[in-house]
Image (tube, rainbow, N blue to C red; front, side, top):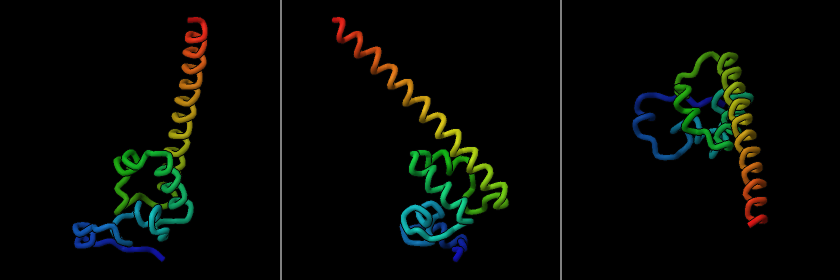
Length: 104
């Protein structure tokens, strides 16, 4: 099942199914695009990059599905890499800070 959006529904969003592609996918578990694109969107949102997702795509009129899925995969992979790098930096900072505290 795919939900279609019109100008009236976009201007009267109230959090119900059909209001917005992200809430349809994440909150209501309503299929919006392809199963792959929906899963990637849910994962990107879970990673905390909902704003980035919305600024990168017009989710009311996304590109063709194949291109859309490829771009979503690129975004997800980049976000994963960024998060991993930040986590490693934080781990290194904790190690260094712990050593400095232990030496004081």
